[in-house]
Image (cartoon, rainbow over all chains, first blue to last red; front, side, top):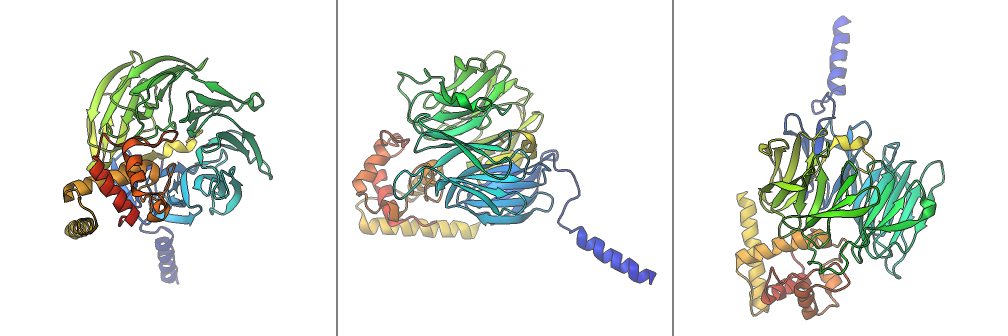
Length: 390
Length: 110
């Protein structure tokens, strides 16, 4: 009898702890997108190595990731409308749906229970349960003509169980509230031409949309939505010849350092320095090319910048105190993304055309590691789970 | 890897064979590969890596069907005012843009 019990016990323990699954915390883990092969690597940022390689995730060009609040699951938003829930501990796809035809990023709600996805086709935002990816709400955007609706961009989460996003074709900002049973939608029209991306400040108060079709940016104070959308940085770009833009800048991860914000100029080889109190421009830093990501090291002492084609082989580091470029790194063409470790001692950088991710010490500015990856693009660490807007 | 290289070579040969059959000019295989890389990776930033569209429209034969090749060539080289489409003439010649426009209208194998 004892033997039988032991055998049964052994059998069960083998089953419940699958050989594949890890028993560990996930706070030092992350995901690297391999855009061309529809695969991701699950990585350990302490050991600086890959733990799992997961395939079959569809078109991951321009893919992005949000994390469950327990940091166990990564939700991956694919270009082809795919939404995949990845189990970081087991290296498996817990659930996968194709929710739209052509999509551009998503967000997770304040309480972690809802996942919102922004779609180009069909235009609008769909909200799913984070548990089983079942549809909760489908918000259709404004029709552009008989055939299509406005593309939605710049989707972020905001406090109070809100999602905020912009409508590219019709120049609007919408605030979707999901507190309680019934969804509430607030629409702000005529916010400016062609909002191409949006961001929310790390405190969750201000939503700002970048405008491609005109100068300035559109800002909504989420504490006082009754005041409507106001225009900031109105002089930005005015009366100046813009260079052709070969890649739209990203606003997510907008760099904040104290009272100062740093953001990518559109069509200029410049990083703009903005005073956060009055939202006025207070300077410009000349850089190597047109910035795509302008990201602050978590302590706000450095700004790291990558660039659009044809200058996308370079990364520059700006010292915030002196506003000077302290390092220019040439890493190979297709530097697509950068991600800091949670407290910023290292930064991981994807170099698409070299098929690798390089890791730099942000103090010495020397490379410390290198990981092979197939056409890597976005890098997303689990610390994002606890940041508003990420 | 060898298989992939062989497939790549076969694809390139196929593309160049098609190009020679119906056009007066096509770039060298190496340059063709560069142009396709540019198309998927950099044009793909807006049009999608699989050319199915994004912020910019899809570049599939179906969606380009109604547009004359010359219109596409001009759009590639000069960009389009009022849209985010930039001029690409610093990076490719008119002949290369014509080759690319022809390929796009025919459909580019994955």
